[in-house]
Length: 313
Image 1: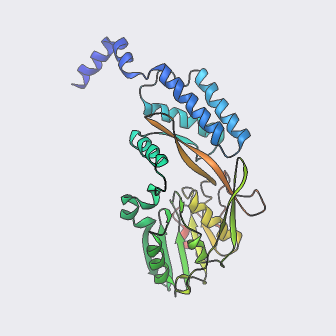
Image 2: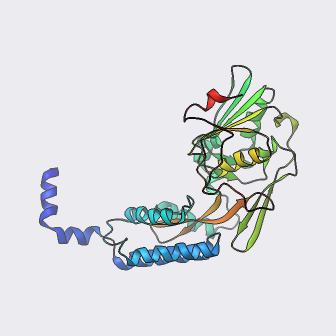
């Protein structure tokens, strides 16, 4: 059957081409829409202009010709954006269902964020994959995402209460792609003094949000030795945690340099099939422009992948 289909395709190339290729006008509109969204929302206006112009130049050069699907469009578009910007938060995705969700969320007033409150978030225990006490009375918390909200707060509190009296604590952020906090910096407040300004956010219009730690009940605080494990797949909000703990000399960072994704992103609709993620804010240390974008968080102790647990001191 496979051979018969191949022969049929070979005998009717013009018909297949008409059936499979995206309409050129639709592709042109999608590229224009993506370029406009980047120019309008990208965190640094001058860089946003350059990225958008590069995307359109690649389109004119034929990069988007003869695409068989919107999935192929998102793949080509993302490759172009990544290679030019080196920004891991800037990408396109084919997902008609996600497009519907983005539109619905923007139409709702006072709606909740799907990431923090979805059934998937609850199913994955808000990123808390494992909490245990290792040999030598060392606490261990494995997080596969950062998902801090009023809804997940009891899970965080339970985890911290469990390791509260251990002699040392490991926060394992390896392969953690990030996430965020919908409330104040409670997680960081478990390890640092209250009222400490950790990060400032800058957008195209200048200074934005200021992130400060909040007071945490003593039952959930941890003041002992702290180790944070990272690798090249540690990204975004997970990097932020490691970065501020290192900046305030609160933790020893062990592993490999992280992904280098410091910007905050938002999703925008390109068309009925595709959405784009655009970096809209940059997180920096207070009073500086210093962050981990492109560079990644640099470990205090560099190890080979998989050897992080062997270098705790």
